[in-house]
Length: 612
Image (cartoon, rainbow, N blue to C red; front, side, top):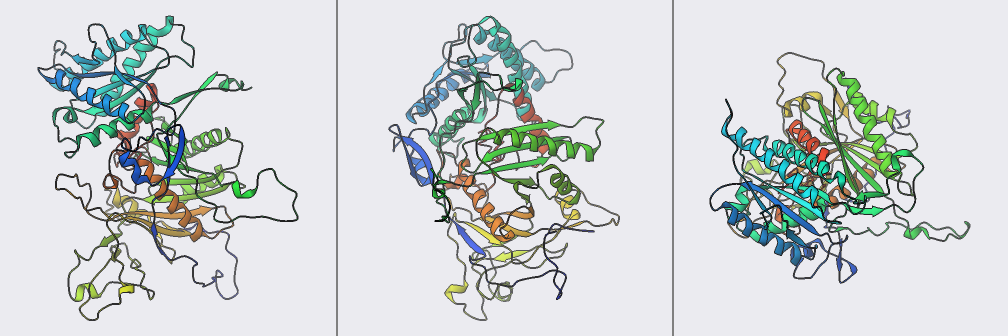
């Protein structure tokens, strides 16, 4: 069965569809340049290259948003010598936070603990309890006591950051510590009931997980301890939402709160220059010329867990000024088709609510992490308004597309079989379910010496957008195979034919030092399929613009401490690039109960957007 996503093409007497062959205005292989970012400096906003973020403190840069004052507590194991090491670690973190002009970062006072570090002694062992369960129960008890203590002595207008030093090695430790933090939040709210804080001045609670190795080993950050501390400092800053007082009360009951919390990032992307200026001498004069009006895009990314019990959705605008997320859990008695439609409707209602706060129209880009097929696409088309400017994509981060470099290719006849177009632009091979498409970059042939213009030699760390010249179908079997599900019997295959397809490529960076961490030495490829759009532009131009925006948004995932070697071109989507999405969804759900996670989901949540 083949689902045809293009239903708007006109009939032609010469064939099923009318096809116009013309040379594209832009090349199919595009190098993507880094976007400009906006930061503060001496009470002004400046715009420049993202490389200046590496030298944040040397350039005396300031956050794009307001400074945030933090009082911190750190829960750590109670062992000989560890408390002093933790005190030194967080003193260094305070120095880095304040040197970067992010605000103040001071230790809190809880009872006889005046240096911010709260050791967690082990409780008495109960029957049939393993050591990990005993330590976890001790953490939860200590978190409840700490929450009750700081609830009675809360300060106005500060952020209480609770550092949970993770001593566990099991895979669900993040979820367990999130539950401990939830116990702390409940105890804090119970103790703070008698206070007279207003909604604007009441203290806020933020959680930050810190692996125990970061405290114990000086080389925990690949030998660059200062870079690692800056990553944590900027992660904590981003998690502290800015409290804004409403200018007027809303009429609806759910909007009657006097204040609202907004995401306040340390830097954002600069506004891109307009590609064209529309003007007319016939129309009446406008107060604001069209040259100052920019299209505003809202990116929505979502995914389902492997067992389809959880759904995660993340929202981010084209500049990174607004970030939000939502986690949904399916009811046990709900059918899968009903649950999928319900989740899509909830995501769209939340989207309209977020965008309704602004007084202008939006363009919407909906990205599904994973392949999308006919039923899910039909649910989206039935949910969204036909008058909206919407693009729907499917993103495959397990793409079979591979790129081989000159140093990895074999000399001789093997390299002479590299496919290429007549213009010298590499293109992927047409593949079957049993074949893997590949592209050879900079291959050397012994039969003939190619011209220099016919060899593509990318530089280390470059990003490229590769738009496929043909419509490339994908199948349900491919999705099942990537999830580890192998079918032994013959089933009716389902195919999807997108409007356009592209690849977002990131060439790896060669580390200057052997101690530098290497996450991947292969060129990363993310496969994007445009399967539905409501626009007057061509599918190729729409997809090209989306790829460029995704590439720009990936720089919001750049930690100010590190160079681009720590950045990957994965989307800035919370938890989206972690394959065990069920665990990530549960983790996000527990944090959602007590604190709004930031979306510097750097793929380490992440996500993409992630806890150092």
